[in-house]
Every structure is written in structure tokens, then in C-alpha cells.
Image (cartoon, rainbow, N blue to C red; front, side, top):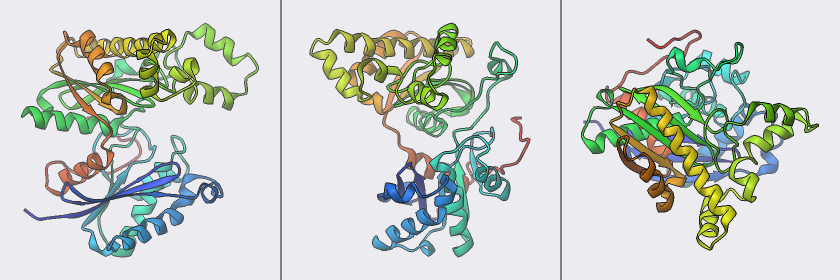
Length: 361
């Protein structure tokens, strides 16, 4: 089997993480921290393309690589139109949609432009994997209860799909023959039900899901309406609900290690909020079990919060009756990205083309 030298790029708000892989074995990883004052000069993430590209090239050179050394490159997909899960060629339609921020601004919107420039310079194939806008929901899952507002699929698709593959490999099963519920627990929380490899429904902490360390989750409609008319400016209210909501709104910290320590020291408020977040996560997992008619083979718990033995144990106590529970702590995004690329290069999956009006079969 051919050995591939592969480059992975993952832009964040003020950094760009890069990794070099030999097939799926990581041989180098670097986190390029950008000058915040420089980043602020750009009007939007796409305008940062050349700045970040030069930083990536320079970092590679510092580590003994040039862009000519790679057989292919992959990155984190930007916020695109609703798409099927999988690995996508970077084409003109994708670049056009990212340029106009078709579904919102995000640092990862620069990825496709960085990789496209690399492809133009050295001719290697370039791809993105499982963007946040992966949407395979069934029709019933889209109805919100109020005409004109549709439930959308914007969640931690990359990590959740990666855990599905890792869990299937560990268990020696085919992911397309089993049903899963996977909960990503981080600053935001996403919980997905997966029917034979297809993510048919999700709940997330910035819409209808449980609250998270910084996001408010589902809120009572009448109280939310009152809040909207309380005089708080729109952008400030968004910040309060999506960046300063959840655990932070009660305890003024987003650090779940700190919250757990406070609870162990006898802080009753910290203990109540911690256990309430766990309770809501478990409720949402139970909700996802109904979307699979109770036919759940495995449940996966992932994300940074999954490192907590206390949180994992308390979740397992409540949901263990549904199915076997396994833990995959952290968020191995670089491995998830290169694995999606490797499945395409080795013929395990077909590469997908991004296009307007694409629908799930």
C-alpha cells in the first residue's frame, strides 16, 4: 500500500493548527499563533487567506518541509450550505459561497482558500471534511413547531463522525450496520442520533439542546421574548446567550475543572449547576434514543468535558440502561480530518462534489 505524506490545516480565531501525517500517523503538529492586532485588520476571515497561507508555509519551512513534499492536503470545512457528510473537493461553488459567508462567518471559512492556493502552486489535490453544516436530518426532525423557522443542522459534525468511525473500529463492527448516539461535550454541546451511518437528528446547546459551559441551550419562549424586549442590544444579547450563558451565567466561569473542584469543596451552587448540566445532557441522549425507536447499539461520550471521570460516571449511571456507553475524551480534529482524506485516497469512500441544491439520497 502506498505511503502518503499528508498536510492538515485547521484555522482557529487567532491561530492556525497544522499537522503532517504519514498516512494516518502524525509526525508533526504545530499551532501557529497569530498576532491579534494583525488579525483585527482584516474585514472578514476570507481576507486573512494570504496572511495565514504565508504563516503556514513559513512554519513548514521551519520544520524542514515545503509544500512540494505533500501528496494531498485537507482542512476543516467552513460554514457552507447544508451538505451530506463526507470529504469534499474544493471547487469554485464552495469558494463562492464561503466568500459571501453563505451560512455565516467563521475562521474555518479561510481553509478552502488556503488549500486552493496551495493546489494552484504545486498541483496537489485538496479537500475539506465534514463541515459544521453537515445535514442528513430526516424530514420530521426539521419541523420546529412554528412555520417559517426550520430546525437546522449545525453541530460538531467532524468530531462526532470521527468518534463513530473510531468506536466502530474498536468494536469490530461496520458503522453502517449499527445505530449510535454520540454526545460531544465541550464549550458547546452537540448530541446526535446516527442510524446506520446517517446522522438523522441532533440537538445542540445554541438552539434546542442542553446548556453548556457557555451556551444557554433551550429556553422558555415567553421569558426569552421578554428578554429580547428588555433593552439589551441584539449583538450583546447574542453574546450573553451564546458566549456568556450556560454554566458561565451562573458561576462566572467556563472551566468545568474549576466547577468540579468547587463542587467537591462543598460549593452547593457549583454542585447544583454541574449536576443540572449532566441531567440535561442525559435527557437529550434519552430524546435521541426515541429517534432511533430505542434501537441503540452504542452511546459515545466525547469532547473535552469527557475527560472528567465524575461527569462520565454520572452520565453513564443515568443512560446505561439504553445501550453500552464508551468514552472518547478530547476532540481529535486533526486525526478526524486526515482520516476522512485517507478514506478517499484508499478508495474506502468516494469524494463528494459541493453543489447548490444537493440533496441527501
